Image (cartoon, rainbow, N blue to C red):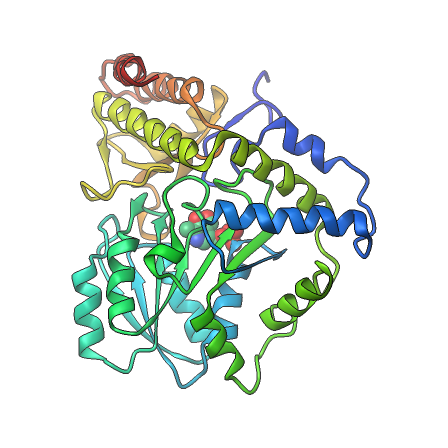
Amino acid sequence: MVYDEKNTLLMTPGPVLFHPRVYQAMSRVAFHHRTPEYRKTFGECVSMMKKVMQTEKDVFIFAGSGTSAMDAAIVNCVSPEDKVLNLIGGKFGERWAEITETFGAKSIRLEVEWGRAIKAEMVSNAIDNEPDIKFVTMCHNETSTAVLNPAPEIAQITTEKGKLLIVDGITSVGGDYVYPDRWGIDILVTGSQKCLGCPPGLGMIMVGPKAWEEINGREKIPSYYLKLSSYKKAFEKSLDTPNTPAVSLVYGLHEALTMILEEGCENRVKRHRLMAEAVRSGMKALGLQLLAEKGYESNTMTALKYPGGVDDSAFRKGMQKHGVLVAGGQSQLKGKIFRVAHMNIIAEREVLLVLAMTGLVLRECGLKCESGAGVSAAQEIFLKNL
Ligand SMILES: Cc1ncc(COP(=O)(O)O)c(C=O)c1O
């Protein structure tokens, strides 16, 4: 087979396509971590991570997927007697509610239909109905539906009402605008394998002063590994982590963050937004409909509804046969949508390719469509903007 694991184009929402520079960086000897050599690399990683997260607040990096950073947010801040408003419009918004309940706190679910965005007004009303809510959790870019929730507007409400806002930026940080300090986000989490462009296995968490007040006011944190005060102490003392870090992944992250800063955060977001526009335009030209509510479409991925008669498994297998891997729907959206991620180094070449293959495979699946229309529509966008 021509297209094997080594040369299949990953247009999945993590792991994504990683640059060879990152793999090369990871092949360095994994040096002992309690040394000036490693500490220098790790210290630079944290400084670069703060730039990419657009924050002056504390940032910690540890071994674990994105969910470990979500776990850290709740286990450190939220006590069993606390009420947490969980904003849910998909699988990852829902995950916050599951974690909240895992630690015994009261979850109040504000749910919208999957594919729709959560509006600031809904959040305001929910808080007014239950004024003793202490925390609000949200997924900024809901990966299961490709909806970008309006974080700045929601943060304005939580700030006005004196609630702590905990945000999952796992598929927005490094790919779209996220300004935690300016917007008023108290905790922001992300993971390595999406827009940051480093293989899976690192979680990152930004912790602001109001969150620290909560953490420091608690008698006991019911976690050993994810206790944030241990990470703060170790880092401030000697640029260390409390336990053995994932040394090779940290080397990979160092290179990935260097590449982000070489491109420039603003340029990177603009590129992601342009790729998203081209994908949306191309997919619509092929006759496909977006799942996301108009005006709230994600800029790092796109979710498409299957047209009648196109089978999910046949479509995605067809794409893979031609060397492109896209993702299916999750939970209640299984079999109904497919998702194309355009994160990290995905650019015009990959976008044109995924649109060409989508047209071809839709035809192979029996759909009557103009199979080259997607490519033409995207080319028009690139001709105007590149
Ligand atoms: C928005 C969002 N939140 C959370 C997660 C969970 O991250 P991980 O699988 O790295 O634990 C994902 C993974 O796809 C995600 O996209």
